[in-house]
Length: 319
Image 1 (cartoon, helix red, strand yellow):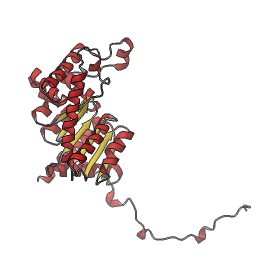
Image 2 (image 1 turned 180 degrees about the horizontal axis):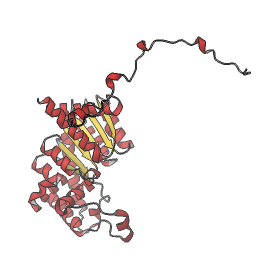
Image 3 (image 1 turned 120 degrees about the vertical axis):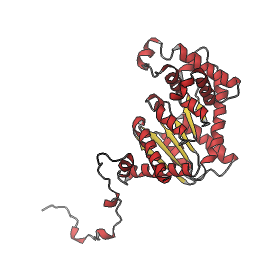
């Protein structure tokens, strides 16, 4: 017998499970995949629990935004292009799934290299050792020339490069995100941090052109933000710092000039959670209405899955 006092469990107060609110019930559970079933059936079979429920919910918001002609803004780091998602992004542009696309400076490099040379993404560790990292002549010369020409013609950086790629390679619409954005009148804005991209270390780099064209793109981006009011969408895919910061500043510009800009939905797609996307995309902007979502996973899996689900839902809504 213990020398210490013990709780008398016979004195506890209990209640019936019938009176308890439960977060999980059989109606929310997933279903096993039936061989030969459609993608729509697979997506519907996911559990209505936690992130699967969130993904279904966000897909519905995006589909409804499209039906109601609300803006669907896509912001991305360059990694999404580098892992082979250009065909998915081009399809989103062609089918009108997105109303704008915004990239960091590296996105221009990968899009240009894939379009003109059919390859991109060097071995950084190996090239850094001998000082050859980022020193490909064609990329440095051409992209900087595109940007200088855009500056002279009063264009934004994304618009200027998309137009230049189309002129340089008439069949660029098969590979280029920026060329397709230009042709289909989808604003493509590029937000540059000078010194972060390999083209900045080439002699053709023009700081004035980089700054002016990227700032023009910020203003184009900010002019588009009011269109997300009351049901629009902002998605961030893999940009950990630049695009979340750009969005926050553009949102305050929009709310200052053309209020209200509230009641919209945001989502951050990335492989891990970072502070700025979580706070600047998911949390702060939706405090005045709407909802923010976080989806963790590899871009090359998550983005095609998401796009397929939206397309299937739109097909269903249109009958």
